[in-house]
Length: 58
Ligand SMILES: [Zn+2]
Image: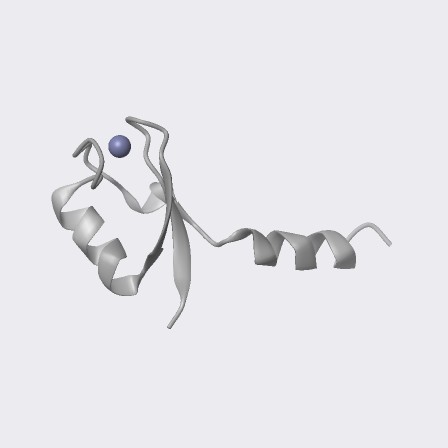
């Protein structure tokens, strides 16, 4: 199961979520402040960024 990081545009809280929690947040909003969430508020965790940094600029 993959996880993504949700960053709330309302309260700024970053939460690692699985697919099921992602669907829930898209339906009901941020679990902290209930601000409605969109797809743009979800991003892959940092591990992917590290791989990209290692492969780039050569
Ligand atoms: Zn929030």
